Image (tube, rainbow, N blue to C red; front, top):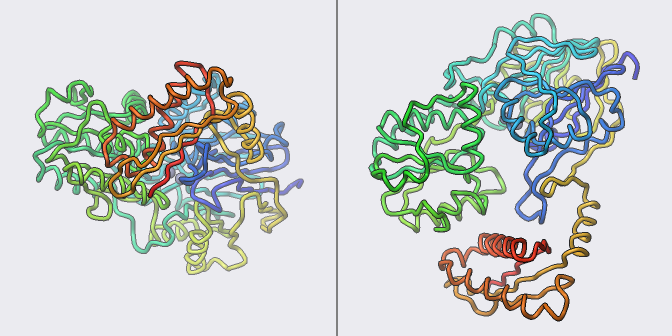
Length: 551
Ligand SMILES: [Zn+2]
Ligand SMILES: [Zn+2]
């Protein structure tokens, strides 16, 4: 592949998530982003998924750096796993690196070389010169990339939308993108997430209007659930809270940690005495409270889910409370989110969400914005990225309308190689690609996961919890029965099994009907209760499988 430039997506062109793209020329490789994806509801035992980066491992002596566009986990989540194998420098803007640093610490990778860059900085990495260009998106400090290569200029938009009134006042750098268009761009890679949506994406400021409207009509407590990384959204919630004389309580580990990072780097502004502790909640009058938390996707163990099912120690829903789900309902999560909303209504809260109010706007460009980007850059070749196949197809239709010929548009699959030689691009085979499944901090492919399950079974055995529940009333028909294999010696087992049974019976007794009628929440609850018990009492970690039969 001498004198040829290769562009290889290892993830992100068959899904939304797993973003990772390789640029290779001669002996130099740079990697754009290293993201993860969360699994569908039923992928047992898998916490998240990262791209198979064995191609990089097989070319480890060539890999010069990882360049990050922004701090979302679908762009940074695979980083700890990659850095464990390849200790290369990581370039990113200050907030991106701030969020990354926290993750790396959890993986004992605090010695990694993190190189902060500012928009319009240019860094030379091997055969490449990478320029960082400010974009607007649902996280602060996002950038696109203008990359000079020996084969020509490559522009990567990162995740973006054209927000004319961003919360932090940092506008998208249209001038730079225009300059790339003037200069002549060989290849444009652009965000396809919203390529199905017509018109323009609303500005983040619209959410403030919706918040103000809700706040002005509400005299009870307000609880806002959003993504922990959406610093703009948190800022707007805080600003509106201050305007209406309310105090703010941040609830949940990730949201507190992200807010602290953003605060220390100057990306979040909280006036003195606005941010109070959870313990202060009972001292405050209802009309003086805003609680900001996570769990907008209905995740069973999140703060919001625990609040909704009355499992939260400090926050109990009561009449007059208003809960705002200020986030997109990610496809696949609608069912769990719907359940949470029902639980909240049942407890007396008023619930406001995307479908009924403008409490969320997307962070990604819609059709008109994508067209504008194509017009500014006018690339010779176009590669839609960041999307499922249908998003890439819609994006390529837009490109054809902007007079990019069909043969110059490349919809790639993960691992496909786009080779550019003497200014001409063509597909040239593919490299190893795929998905790796992460359970806790371990990594493995599907086979390894099966092996790990077997190992766990071999070490600590399995405990099954059987429970039959009447679906409508939530009352227990039979159980809990506990069956174990390979977990304890026969002699001791009766005693342990009966103590486990007692524990579970008591747990179930303490739950209300509502939670009992929601088998996914109930399973999560039983599993976590038993897991903790066995770990604390016996230092054992068997596989725990609750089986709930609804009759
Ligand atoms: Zn993003
Ligand atoms: Zn993304």
